[in-house]
Length: 211
Image 1 (cartoon, rainbow, N blue to C red):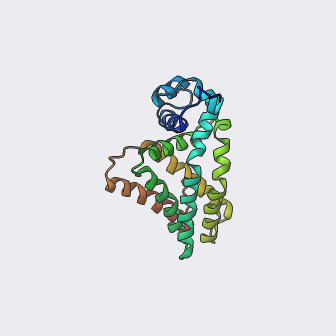
Image 2: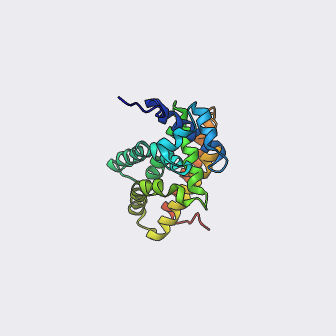
Image 3: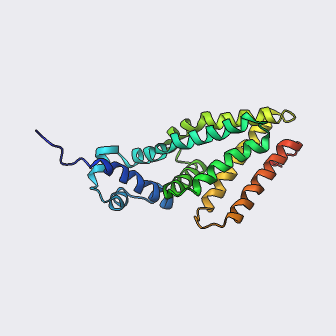
């Protein structure tokens, strides 16, 4: 029986994705070579083509690998809030706290993934690389937006949407700079409360944080 000598063992593809996640987060897409990834993963260079065809395809799969778990966590957090009164402050906290929990996860891959996702979503000029992940997350992002619109009836829906977009980008920008796993819990809580207080007040009091 013929055997494929080029195929990686079952863990080979996962090792490449693990390595890509770390290196893309640290060095960006352009600053990471295929050889960098295979060297860290300890696999042959040709296996990237075997499993992913191109570096761009490897990047896209890296972005999508944790997307179901991340999206599921965001949905679950919102579901929990909506069982109660579901006010704007609680909705914003659910979204932010999900990100913080993953950043502080004992799995260091989540820190790399959150940083990679944040930098990718914030950066222009690479839209073709993150189109699949953007489409994957769109439904849960829209759910939070609709929940905030319902929770802030005194605000125009378009204004709530703008505030929500700014909140999301502010979180991503902050998380890119707060990737130290040793960050003191008090510091993290201060950052958390600052975000929630500013944006919740804007939604509750009718004051715009966009001014």
